[in-house]
Amino acid sequence: MKTKNTPNSQLTVQTLDFLRDLAQNNNREWFQANRPRYDAAKAEFEHFVGRLLQGIETFENLPNTSIKDCIFRINRDIRFSKDKAPYKKHLAAAVGPGGRHSGRIDYYLHLQPDGESFLGAGMWQPTPAHLAKFRQEVDYNVDELKDIIEAPEFRTYFPEISGESMKTAPKGYSADHPEIDLLRRKELFFMHRYSDKDVLKPGFADEVVKGCRLIKPYCDYLNYLFYDEKDETISL
Image (cartoon, rainbow, N blue to C red; front, top):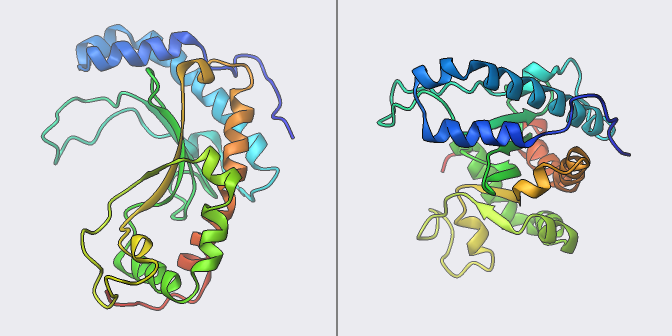
């Protein structure tokens, strides 16, 4: 099902140009002088995320989830960072029940010029208990996970895996375990990158919704494993 086209809901080169210029002038003085450009880019991105919600709601339950719930602030938290640049170089949204603070595995869209835009989802910075559950499931019943992430259509659309892996086998698992590569994963986050040309196409929202639909089984797998089963703490 295609998302509904509404006025001003297509992303434009002006938004990418603003983000590109912001990356070169990441300071409050420049930002305030270019505030109208930011306001226009923000409004455009909000309309776009609204279209995503329309499409994703055809296969995902998103009760009481508004556009603003999903969009991240452009301001960076610099309190504990050596990088004191005050603004992010991208616009981003996380779509899940209740938005970016759903606490569950959701769909993450990152908009950044020069080929840095991507859709991603998966295990990212899991708690020790969640990581232990993941490894236990890989050890006991890896077929369900591999049926999802090794499906040809899935791997064609999400060829890039992001996240850390251990250099050695995790405690309690043998280095010659047949699934040692998965067991060593500390994060397992799949990504599909979009060129600027992709981002500016009229059907880009439909394309992102397609990607979300493809990765939904993996999100469902993790959400069931981490949140929908009875939560019992497992030590690493």
